[in-house]
Image (tube, rainbow, N blue to C red; front, side, top):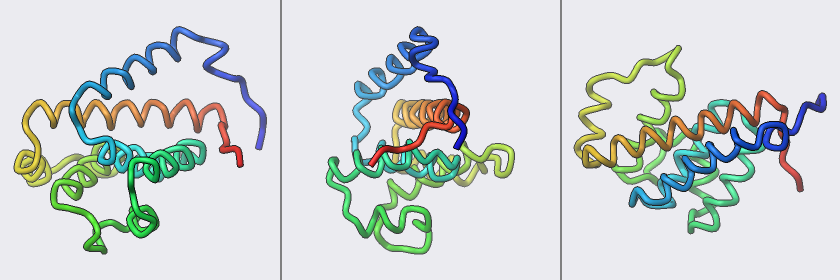
Length: 146
């Protein structure tokens, strides 16, 4: 892989802005395990090896099981995820793959069955934030370390 610049060092204000979004997400009341599933799924979709590695490890620390982590990419085919998590994962996929799949009204209505309006906004912020992190990770060819 080609070496690219260390973006956080090159533009520390950009990194601070991203870190501030993460700090705000920590105050939303959304479950950490749910946030990690969302982060991991978006990172899988975006092909960010660095973020996939980090969020799989963070999800384990948040109590995720290996069965759930190993099947997250095919979550629709399992019974491992709650209806709330399924709604969040569907929203994550729609919001991450906007050029391929616009969020349908049915997905939005399903989301409202499991999340308050504030939680929907905060979940959407979490999805937008991990998508931004993924662009830094992929764009600057960050790779996980062993």
